[in-house]
Structure formats: structure tokens, C-alpha cells
Length: 123
Image (cartoon, rainbow, N blue to C red; front, side, top):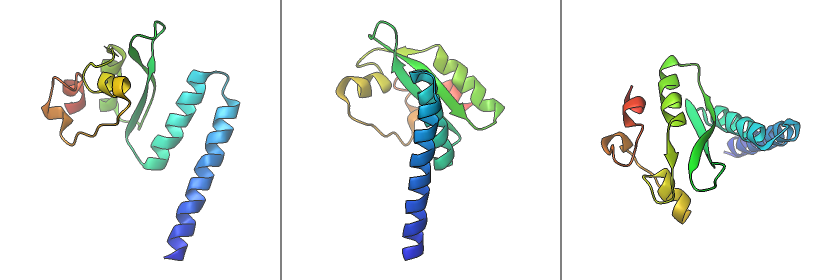
């Protein structure tokens, strides 16, 4: 049991170190976000991750850095994300942005109104 705890602590420490290094080596905020996202996606063993950032007007969210496993099917989802902007209160991301509360959806693909990229995600 103690070994597992030490192993988890070591992994968190290693991730923190790698994050600090990647961020310090980034030349701008977008690069720092991309490096951070990559490290979290890899550490979590996830297939895909993306960051949503305010656009130039500050009135909508746009897709920022994306990191995903080498899987051609994920490219369609990434491209669909680049076409979308969310305003405060709009489906899912805009709602989270507006009230600052996280949301979890187990079967998001079943609610096309809340998940505008459902077709691309299903593919």
C-alpha cells in the first residue's frame, strides 16, 4: 500500500516538474497551454484533449490548443471544434464559462442540442 502511494506521489512530482519545464520553455501563452495540455493528456492516458479560450473580443470561446493520440478519426472532431464558438450560456461549454461550475455528461452524444459536435464525436 505504501509503495502505491509513493509511486503516485512520484508521478505527480514528475508531472509537476515536466509542466514547469514545458511552461518555462514556451514563448507565449498558447504554447504554454499546448504543452500543459499534452502533458495532462499523456499522463491521464486520454485519447483527446482540448483547451477553449476567449476569442479576441472576449465575448466567446474558441478552440485553442488540441492534443490527441495518433488516430485519424479524431481529426474530424478537431476540425469540427475549430468551426465553433461558444458564447456565455450556450450549450455546455458556454454554460460552464458563464457560471464557473463544472459539468459531467455520461451520454453527451444523446443530447445534440448540448453537444454541437456530436456527429463528429460519434464518427
